Length: 396
Image (cartoon, rainbow, N blue to C red; front, side, top):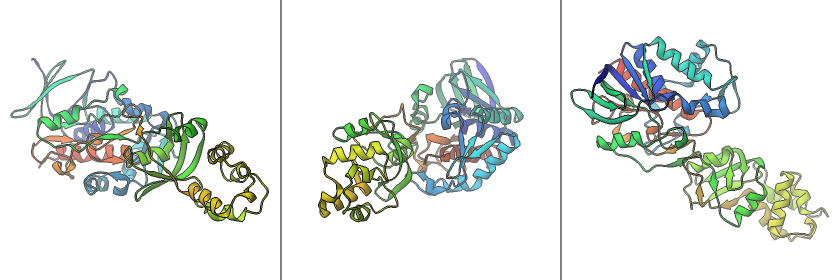
């Protein structure tokens, strides 16, 4: 196969992590080539944040990430912070705003972030090749990558191809296959930040409430989130359900507080002398559709004053601690991220380099580091890309 070109660094994957890593390494003087199998770069960036790209979160820290090695992300996150990327956004005069909880969104659209990355790559003289399918990777005196366009050679190789979520955007298990090829272990992978599915009788209630959203506290074990829950015709979605999906495996119990901040049992006890229907009382605190559906589910037609005190306490307790067991999720096609991946015990937390294969780096979602919803996964892309980019640009 004919040699296309040689470079100091070859990056496979032109997403957030790959493009940022390339720009950093190129800016430090390395010759860099990026290969992308899609016809366009940054496909996942373009659809992120409802098309406005939640590009970071001001509160991003180790507590916002899941990993089999919880300390792994600390070094990279400490060396490239949310304020560092915001400085880059300001440099490119991109208008943005904080939506809530530290989440930073473009005022205009996600294309602005892609253009920022392309501009940084251009300034660093990075070569970007799209529509290139990688057929094989070998390591000899350097890395040799055979592609649909020919042979590429590089001293260092960064794998930035993401993971299994959103296959319609070209997601594959490429990073995992390369890891296995070089004897790098993987942890178990599952869809994360994904809607939860249920079976009857819970599903009937959820179908009846499809489209309704409300703020809740959702819990699995010691992990909890306060955010909006959305009922769907398949189960539960919205930020609260997506967040807990990264922690709760199908078949494991979750708990939902429909009235966070209110002791529902005590509140209902105070209303016990009323002649009002229970659905009307609940409707003063809950969306009307939910209040009515909840009472129908309980099969209670009597006014609240005719309901026994013990039964009323049980109703209040369930409103604060609705226990459910998801039967599954909507899978990788609807998952925003993949939980699990390349075992970080085998990777340098400072350089993102394999501990056993010199010059081979993994960054972004391919690693067993998964952020919460709200800009945290983009911050991991920038931080891990920066770590690898500076390691290549400033070799040992």
